[in-house]
Image 1 (cartoon, helix red, strand yellow):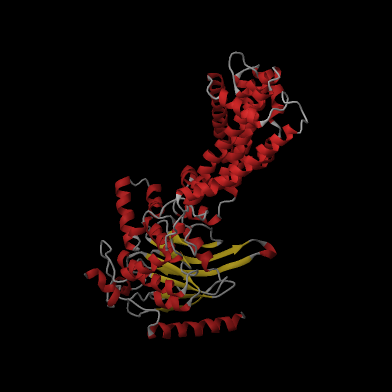
Image 2: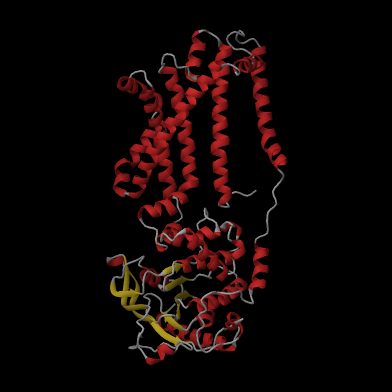
Length: 304
Length: 268
């Protein structure tokens, strides 16, 4: 094969075949390459699930046992502090009712909508601030400040502006979550290895293309931290909002909590609290945890 | 210095001399680069002139800190010259000491990115990427992620990505500097083969004398602080070469002797 010649024989002229062929070194290189990329076998799915689950199960068991113990001591009467068994039984009974599911759906719809809006605003602001130095000087510290502002402090203003309405809740959820999202993105962009932006520039990524193909994906791992934090703030703000902003004929988790307190039904109240906690854990570990793990795995930032 | 005849082994077009066509792929004229200003100013490059002909592989050789990388950065347009001018046939592509592959993209997506940025349609892009991966002999690693590859393989992917830019000029900034000697030998063979196959113009920066003698059509020796062209060595050792060729070793000795002279003159 003519293409193999330059490998072995010194030729007087340049050979520029239109298509590269296989060279004699191929097998040798492939052998070394194969050595260099030994596959790492992972444990079985069942084994992984067990490793991930038993510490959690044990921790939950310890917490429930402690709770049960406190109730046994008779520190508070059982109609104020019911034992976990009663609360879980109540939760089991409520789980089949449309009231609970309706409330969960209303709350989740608000959370998703509010967080989605916060993401859009946070990402836009974060992109602009990370791009333009002037903007960073102008509002960089303001965004930090907003992040530390307790979202409940926004409610008086929200209620004056929007009355007791969905908008008031959304307003506070967005203000609670957007600064974290923006900050996460700014932080992520700041920590991109300079060589990657440089390569992007050399490869011809400019303007929006640079953001789409280089800067945003490069910032993603640290940005996920900001998204998680934003979600946590959104969820907290939402709970505070639902306790304060009661909208007639629209049951939500926060509202059920409030109603149960007014009826002095602490079993029901604790059952709702458990629901809120479980939703928080499920979203954090299943949704955000999974996305984060996928990202890190794909980039080799995680060892099996 | 730019007037030195380019001794490109076997390239007949260059024999006619400096005035003949085609125009040079890179022409650096009286380039000076100063960083900072006032008392803290550092003169990195001083009055450098250099002409690289199309299809030529020129090695820029110098000790660390002599401004070799600065020279490449200016040619790439990443930095502006303080004085003088740089002409280059189109926007050059660039390879660094780190492969700097994008960790969120697979091998084939990395190689395809320059094509995507040029809005190459999907089918043509995939075909070209497959071709380039075959060229660097990593066809079977197309779907892998960069972190699954060895350092040498990553550099080959980076080379394929640089070639995907279809730039006439390829700038290489100590691309094999971080690799072990064995891998480097293999990559020298690979680079020579790919360069012969594609006919690109390569400006290759290194501090390794043997590497320069192994690869270059011409070696341009730079002094340190400020970087000036100290000497130019044409290399007319037939290709393909080997790093252990006696001719390569002999040339490396000559270049090293010249380098020592320079160091002795200016103080290390």
